Image (cartoon, rainbow, N blue to C red; front, side, top):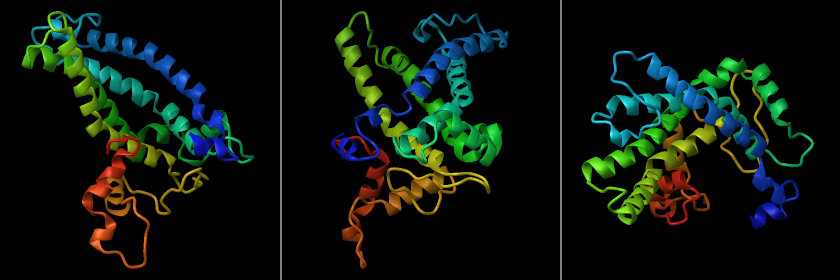
Length: 256
């Protein structure tokens, strides 16, 4: 925060970059997800009656309700992924600079120079990490109450404190899976796509060569970013080992 405040092109207002886009995304998500969920239930006539307002733990067999809920979250966020792309680029760009476009100009540039609206949805470097994140995230979130009540026998009514602590612990544990996917997804969102795509001038240093895809990005982060100053002759000890590279996938988590 101190460094952002002291950077001429940033300042304290940079902490709220993309806030309008983020708010618009949240409003649309809260509206669309229940609508899509209800539509999926209506289009699945061969499953037992499902009420979207009933918790999953109340169903004798929660497999199908869980699958429909996860699918509704996935479809919602895939449809809204262009807004997430715009928000990520707004965060990466300088706040106050003559070349920094507005969110509308960013959207227009993405449509005109990077393959159109369909590319914003279905380009592999955007679609694959989006599907991974928005499938795993709701799956883990919705499965935690089922795991606590069905597998561990911890009831929120009989043991509220234990249930809350376990819920918090499992929620934090899910970040071990989600943070690398989120890190790679944001890296790929910053990259330009298509022959007309122009590399954006970010406020942080980015890799000179673009990542090919999700797997290659993870491999490059783990093997190239060890968090130590580069020297002409580097030994394995200087590199910091494999853990130093893996740690870069969890930037922002202070205990790592």
